[in-house]
Length: 221
Length: 211
Image 1 (cartoon, rainbow over the protein chains, first blue to last red):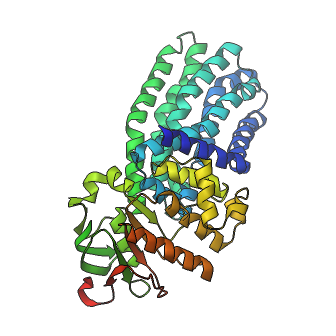
Image 2: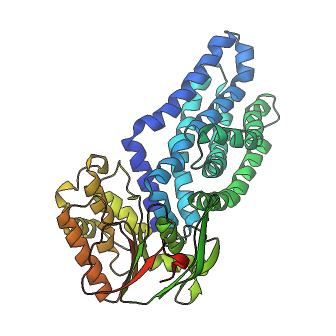
Image 3: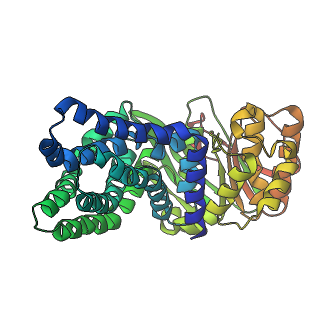
């Protein structure tokens, strides 16, 4: 537990001292979400209809952008091999790093989403559903993203490869995440979508840390 | 006791060495020598368990290291070719993380004392990014003072980038560790004498690579 807290604190401290990395992904999210209404035109019904999908895709891409820093710099300066030689199971450290990644991308994205949703004229109840879906869905992006980031560790052009590996895996999260708000609007209720997202979260929480730890060990080999 | 039994290593298509075997009992130093690219770093990484050998086995107290990973890591300090320091953090912050990973309870005071031992007490507020190559190496090596209780030290080129005084100091630290019943494996290009300790030698250039 001490190792978990220590690694989490360390990753957050490093991110605070290198703010541009964190801010880049968030600005990317804001700009992509801001460009759509300009491109599509001021048609309120159309904007309301596409809002959840656009915000989800933008959040997905922003989360991808920030995956590079998850292991790459630790791999380059040798701290990752010291972690692999730690006295606690390596997956504990990996979970701490995933949580730090989510706190620095998924959580701020979720908090920014309601502000951006105003641009799309989403009704307040739908904004609530959208945020709830992002809150449950973005941790899945961090978990799956970490597996891909670990698999592409040390490869040239790893960033693009990471995106190619993760984006198809994230399709179910996108479908049910964006679908939640649409279901709420059509009166079906978003509950089933949110439960399914929760199930994705639990499954990836069970599998991803273990798979990531194994992939990092292979990269260090 | 650290043992290597018939260890071989293949990187890419190239065989670096095969049939390396030795037994390192407490109170001994093992020096690994060889030309550039002969596989010294690979051998050390195999001994840590970071690299899987192509054949053979590494044992700690008669059991394969893979079967007792966390336990083995508790007995081991590995200082590799990379310093394992974060540029953004200060030296004491780096040491606190290293101590937590190694399962040692070291507070800030202990970390500052370890830095003082390598002559870096005045740099404790500076991010590692602003330190010179030699100073970074000294921060990495100050982990030895924190983990003095770990019996096995595996050091990859520990003397690189150090000035003459720091080399002398590190020699004394390693000699003291071995006299106290510890073990150390190290690679070095410089023939740095570590006085008064029993030394085994392993030359990877020699055929068979046997100590």
